[in-house]
Length: 229
Ligand SMILES: O=C(O)[C@H](O)[C@@H](O)[C@H](O)[C@H](O)COP(=O)(O)O
Image 1: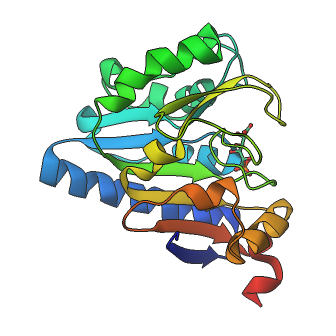
Image 2: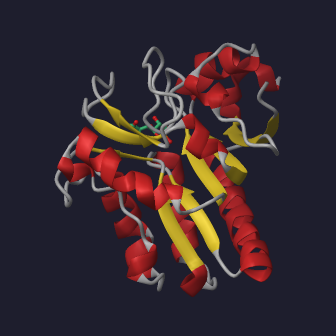
């Protein structure tokens, strides 16, 4: 069973502000306790707002280590790459050492990129925080409903994504669950149906992320719909 802690906010901006605060607090704790903060980034518009806020904050950037939950198989500088978005709004603006930013080499294509990224993930041990979004069909990272992957893999090659582009790579549910904290950022009325199914216990990809501490879902009222009234 997945343990879920729901945190609801009036607006998407409030979700982003609260998530940014939570990330900064987690970074301070992790660096004080273990000398490093290992963070997995997500794509999507809600995470983008969070990254903008982080870029304006001060933090002990030298000890941050960045990974990605998924990436689209597109050329390195393509505007639709998650790494391009995170770079332009956040990573290019702070002083995280470049050797600590572990971009997925998705330009190699799904199989080669997944193979190349596996050792990076397998060396991490446990992440401190994983950020995830949720699509309108209940997908997260690039784990889509109906797709079947080998359960012992840390990084999957993804083909036939229902959302373009069709080829991607994604951390597995096992790798995404190997984190002290997992924070879902869910905003917008388009998410209501998937949120309802998730709350009813349906086996959507979002429901497969099961860290020991449970997942924290930061959600706005638009995505909660009737459930918040
Ligand atoms: O797979 C993709 O192509 C998207 O990046 C997707 O995974 C996104 O994260 C969610 O759809 C939530 O996106 P929003 O935060 O923009 O609602």
